[in-house]
Image (cartoon, rainbow, N blue to C red; front, side, top):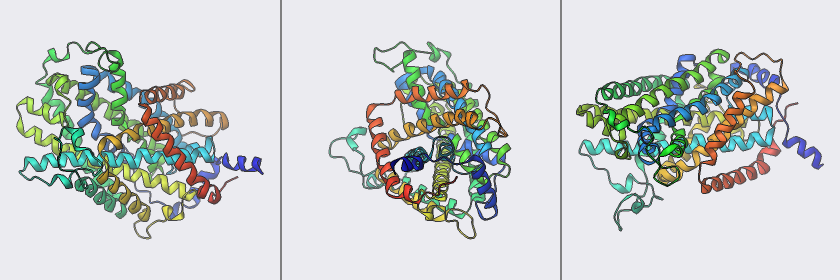
Length: 487
């Protein structure tokens, strides 16, 4: 009996069976509405957000100095290893489950559940994190217009006011209304339909990329090369503060800025030609954003001394120093646009993961139920949106942000492992896109992810352990009994 149960826990899906199942249900499934340009825009929309508008300054001021340019290169390189692995798997298995499905095929059911559960940390917690950042920029825009919202309604209930410089006895937050409000608005848009959502995303992506290019072009003319000397400041004596250790620590901090390119793989089942379009979307969006990140980091640290960049809106500060005042407003509005599409993509990706898990019986069928007209997982999207809105309204940025990176890095490492396993299990299967440099490329991806995970603090690992234990309990109580096991 125990042996049989073990085999069920480790039951793997057949690649051929997955593709055949979804092909047979194609007419009644998710609507194929996305081309390679929309997928690339989806990736750019997911990537350009809190990272480029906030974390550039944080990493420069606290860890890497002007060497934050190298930090972005290191994180981008690690993500490039993973992106090529994602591209191979997404073209081979063009369904909506992303890392969850790839793990189901290579390692088995229990591991697929664990990684699917941990992906909630990337998508749902990530959306809540970015929503809190959106609320912060929104408040600054309102203040610039002379509108001062009550602090009780713009601060999370669980935030400690004194931890952020407020005096003792400061007003305690009740609920972050702007952060929760933007989540609910975007949820309504996603319920309405994928085509409408991606059209909105494409427009906003064009706006925020334009703003980023404005920062680069206008800022480049005001660079003081003395601010780049030295590129890597001397170590202060504390590990991770300047020096090469600071550059590496900075890479682990700005890694959050790259989260989003993998969400393209969750749209594989809605792509016109997933074998061609998804690899273009994944790799293309990562290349574009890495170039933009490095250029923005160069301009920011060139215009403003890195020690001054540890502010909530570093790009607005950079534009203020150029003397072109209207650019600071453009950057704030561009930041709002960037954060908006990042939330949109993360909310979208979460429901597509749940859709795949419910399709396999590991979650209740309600998460796979499609709206009869809009062909979107409407009920799932609403449930996810409400939970994320509550998290964004009640929890502060630091608590939310700590959980996102480690869950994502674990998923990325498993994607690289899945490529190695599938090459060994099915060496002759047709692969529309083949990642180069096998086995060294996925091995490099695994080692890079592990190195960044090691840099995270112990309490983050403990939270991951607790979250995983909760997930395993749900699997044993529901998923194991209801799983649709394919043979």
